Image 1 (cartoon, rainbow, N blue to C red):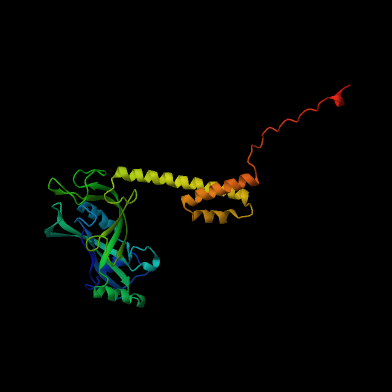
Image 2: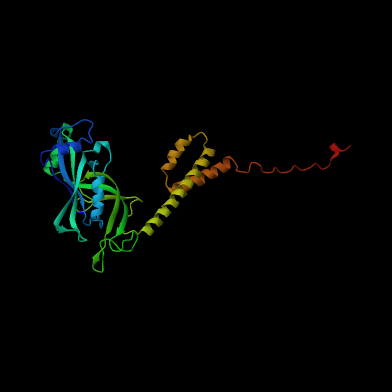
Length: 298
């Protein structure tokens, strides 16, 4: 996956077929003169900077998934950041250039539109001038396997050579496409692709087994911190009953583990002094009988 980039601005007259596709996403029927259309390459089947690549079969699925998705800025998913919408996609094969596995170089191309409004004039000019050129896409795949052994968890490091073959990770079974972004510095060669995986992002060079162990340790840490927070809340309620619980909860959220440990011990000591902690049904010490029982004699 080399550069994802804008091909050109309003590259040709907008056809009736184009408008039919565009008007699937509009609330009223727009005419050709009301929209600005541009073409872009989203990604291809070459190995990217992360040592990963989409096989052609994955690109075919992404071709379907990216139709209707928005173009935004810097992967910030807010309505204010929406700049355009993709209305058509296609795969383009270049028989004169090959990808690393011997497949012909295949690009995922897209066409997007935005309304010709006064507020969009700057975006249109930046696209035409080449200033808004690099793009990056965000998507999700179900599997990420080694190109050499086909395993999801192995010792082959992407970018390293084994027996004359360079290892990479194949991104298989795309499940969703999120958006396409205009970026200043793309994540991959030229533009890169920001990829998200179904089980969460796993850093490069970390095996699946190591990643699971790290997640398990993180879970233990979260559970320990929660136990400390509950301890602080319990004893603070005894020591400072007039303090609203929501205020204390907000304060606890901002504390680290060491701070919570210290505060928990401090509140526990204060609670023991203010209200000795003893079982509610503890047996009272028996009263000593009088030296004689004269009052009870008949």
